Image (cartoon, rainbow over all chains, first blue to last red; front, side):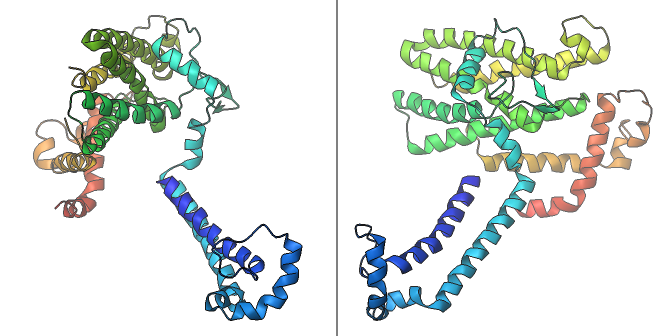
Length: 305
Length: 75
């Protein structure tokens, strides 16, 4: 949705600029659609005063060389920039754009390491997110920070791979892609809402934001893609093996990541802390982590028959 | 299972309505879920049942004014 706004706004702003450029440079080429850059601009400027009378003969050009319309164009561009500011200000209230930019500050090295961590989280020692003066460090510099790039790309890739899987079963039609996309999105939203509700009920004091939860729920798309691709290449055996591996990996990954965020300090170190509250938090962590493999299997088993 | 976003919105509206129609006096107090029975825990953690009761009460307070217009959106 944000892309549409910037596209229309930049398109709208470019339009008056291009028209103003045309007024100065196309005195000699009034019939062309695009301005002619083969002639150097000095020759063009010497030629244009003599051509002004000729330009007035074309009704389309009077619109552009008239001072009144220049004023109108300038007013229109100022209106456009004012509208763009208004849209930015109001959009920031509903969709925190600056916060979203943090989650997309990734680079190739981070994506590679994070993907490796998602399928093989067993060797990684330090799972803490590093901070820089109270704000979390951008994902580019810290592999433990959640990002939204991998979940977004994984979502789209999963839709495409599901379409491929439907094709191998001769069930493909273009509507299926849209249905699969909305189904997956709905399951994601429901899972995030369920996690939010359970976090509220257990009164966990955590700094997990909603976008963090979306990111964590989106990491399972990587495992789903690996499983479905293995199922397409190697048949049901490959699917089950790959799913088993990816399910266990995502389970371990989620437990190790959420343990630091949800549990108290002592319990996160691995010390066995008694008490009903810590036990409840541990159950919550484990159930969130266990829901991931369940969703992974349930969403993909019908794709690989 | 083929879900659409619209069916999610419908489900959410129906669930919210279900929570909003739980009457405080006639029903919730009878089963021990009224908010006058929740002031007990002054410790550091309120407990799940108290949180649920607070959630029900806040949903009712917020949605009472808007649920009518939400229902008007359904065809």
